[in-house]
Length: 207
Length: 298
Image 1 (cartoon, rainbow over the protein chains, first blue to last red):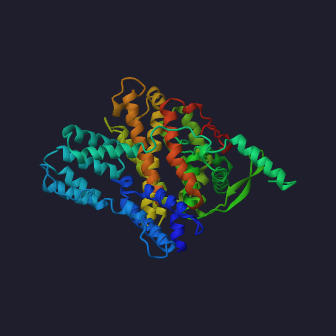
Image 2 (cartoon, rainbow over the protein chains, first blue to last red):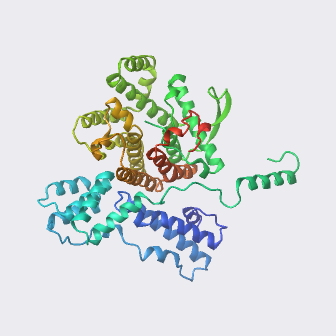
Image 3 (tube, rainbow over the protein chains, first blue to last red):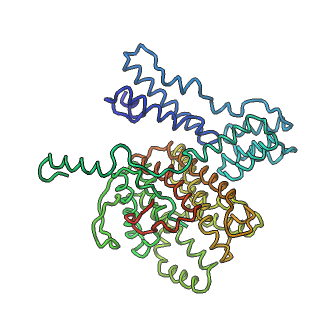
């Protein structure tokens, strides 16, 4: 049980609300959408399973082992498996070649995927989409972006290509515009004033 | 080329800021003890980041103190000199060694004399660092050779030249035996290296064009003037954001102990802030300062 609490990063004395908040924060961090086309997506999936398990164990033990937890269902049942990303028959003219590329990408066999793409006779929208995914996994983000844009220009109504472009843009800009940091809660001056008052209460020496 | 990888200090807890400064001071002490005082002039914030990363992974969090000569000989907290800190120190010196070689090859007569003199004076320290991290030294040499070849091509793009510096930093992941850790460190350092290369290209665009030195941006964006258009800046902003986010995703899969919050700050906030300052032309207003106490905006 101590391990479950340390997985969520809370103390065993934390309230249910604190446990739930810690779970939600971690689930947001390791959600599959944050690791789409990321070569570390398998490690994120393992981490997500660990977090879900830890949350379930804590909630089960706190509710006396009878009630079912609701938390993990929200992030478990609705979650797409990473391996399903490319797991459907290609409908484009690339046919069998692109299916091999998708499988290779699924298993992070990037050299194999690149070799198959280079040997393709047709460079259609699907080719550019898969080339974009390959570049993204390799870390060649500029070419990835160009390829996704080209795929969308060639087939603007294709949801898969549009989702890839949107997802890439979201990952590139997860926090929106850069915000100036602001003091939360009390401002710095009020905090110092309170600290000073506490010092006086403690007697000479203080901090 | 360095100094862009920093935290946003207003969003660090006080103890995290102290720990960040201690990483910087600990790295300085390691460089001074292993390679001599003059080599401490190679010190930069980016390698303080590397120190935090390597000590975080190893779960090392002991802080001791050391006397700081530039800081009027006052005692300052510094991370204990462990194998992780020594590794960051050696890596920093090796990169400096290759920078000197580059100066000798490309700079004007005065630059070449200065770099040549530095190479002779610091020869023993440079050799010692190479002996400590021979694989890293080899990776730096190979990737610099790759970069030099790309610089002679007509349209190398942005990813290929950035890949060379990214691979230099990523090669440090070979120090880790555990496969999962090695994969995460590789991704983190690859994208940090890529981000540094591109942001430095943005900052030095005008200077490089003036001096006739290679810069990937004019070829990539077909520039007719020495600045990026708003559309080009948006593309650069997106590609920088893609790398800083990829580095952040990799860092979050590592167990980083007391360094976790600081590294999260650097990747999630520090990098985008630095990118905006460079793209808006305000980076030169950020006080470079050699010592962390001089960090102003960042």
